[in-house]
Image 1 (cartoon, rainbow, N blue to C red):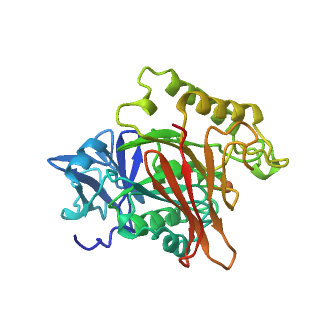
Image 2: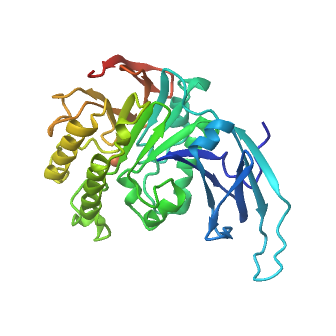
Length: 370
Ligand SMILES: [Fe+2]
C-alpha cells in the first residue's frame, strides 16, 4: 500500500483479544497516534490525553469494524517537545494497511514459541503458508528474558515480518518473559485484556482460550529471588476459567463457533521432574474444567523445546488431557528453528512440524471428537 514511515520500528501488528483488535505500533521517536477505521478514529490515549512518552502505541478497535472495512490507517504526529502550553507537533503522517479477517476454510495457523531472542529463523519458519496464512500464534518465551525494553523488539519483529500487519496475531506469555527488571512492563508492550495475560478470543468460526501458567517452578525458588507471586496468578485464573463456564453467555458454544482451541505456553497436563512438578491439584482442576465443560478440540503449547503430538493418554497426559495436545516449537542450537503449521477444519486439524530451512518432520491429521 505505502512504505513504512521511519517513525515506525516495524509494521503495525494486529493482536486479537476477546472481541477487539489491539493494533500495536513500536516507534523510533516520540509521537501521538491514532488509527482510522471506516469513518472513526481510535486513539492511543490515557483518559483523553494522547500518549507520546512511549516506545509503543496501542489502539483498540472493535473486531466487527475492522472485519468489515478490511483496511486501517495509522495516523501520527511527531512530538519533538511536549510542552504544557503551545506544543508544536509535526504534521499528520499516515500509513494504510490492508487487513484480512479469519473467514477462510480451512484456517491456516502458524505457531511459534521459544524463539529466545532469535528473529530470522522463526520468521523463515513462519513463512510456511506464505500469503495463505490466516493467523499467527506467538506462544511465549519469544525474548530470552525481559531484562531490557529492547528485548521486546523480537516479539514485534517476528509478528510484523510474518503477518505484515495484514492478519491477526494471538500472543501468549511464557515463563522466561517474567524474568528481568522490565518484566513488569511487558504488559505495556504486548496485548493484554486490561493487563490480564489470560483471555479468550473469537476469530470467525474459531474460539480460543489463552492461558498463562506463569513460572515453571515454585514461587520461592531462589532463581526468582522473591520477585513473583504466580500461585496467586493461577488462583485468579482458576476463577476466570470457572467464570467463563458459569456465564450464561457460554462464549465457547456461541452460534457460529466450530473450532475451540486452548493456547498455553506450558503443557500443564504433563508433570515434569522436581522442581518443575508444581500445582498438580490446580492443573488437574484446569484440565477437568476444560475436559468437562469447554471441550477444546486442540491444545497448542511450547516450552519443552520439542515437537510432539500427545493424544489423550499420551506422553504429556499426566492429569487428564481434555483433548490432543501439540507442543510445536524446537529451537536447535546452531541449527534450524522448528514451529507448527496447523490447517484447521471444523472436524479435524492437519499438523505439520516445519523448520526455517523448509523441512517437514510430521504430517498428521488429528480427528476431533464429534
Ligand atoms: Fe518456557
